[in-house]
Length: 255
Image 1 (cartoon, rainbow, N blue to C red):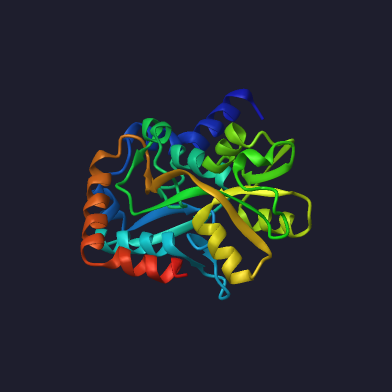
Image 2: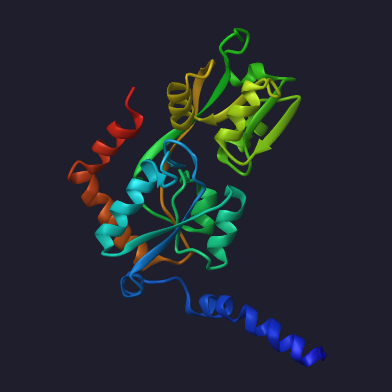
């Protein structure tokens, strides 16, 4: 293939991303005209986002996504992928938003537009129930520890656990499997997901230690999404006021 033709084909392939970058982030009016909001999620972090028995995405974040989209007057369209690819995909214009139990942090606020909080979570340690020697994250020194790749939990583990080996996995289901088979000694995870998994699977695991890095959860939008985040925040405020947030919390996090 002649070089000039190859360059033309390459340029044509990249054109949608170039147009998206030049046009800037979508406004609420553009999303309404589009008729749907493209939302990325892992589908691997129950009870926030997971695939149910009917092979359909469900969970606290999924219900919140649909509530937000209903408030905007559009359809929610979900894409599932591993966490490590989600935020880069948002920056590349592959999605309009991310809903995957994303913590609001100063670093993320500097790089993206984050909504008002719709929930919260904190970081905890889980160990096999038979393990009585680990009481706090500092007791993981020298052990083999698991965490979700690219997550706040992995960051906390690197900072505080002093693990002998820190292994990163796509999500909580992989971590639970590794713990059941004894390939890892402990894990640093989000409390909500861990409590739900232990309760629903009756796994012989225990949450130990103090709550670490408690923080709010938010919808992630492309940087500069000032107009769209204002519309999203208005819906979140309305759903908190009408009791939707309390209902969803009771539904997904009941003891």
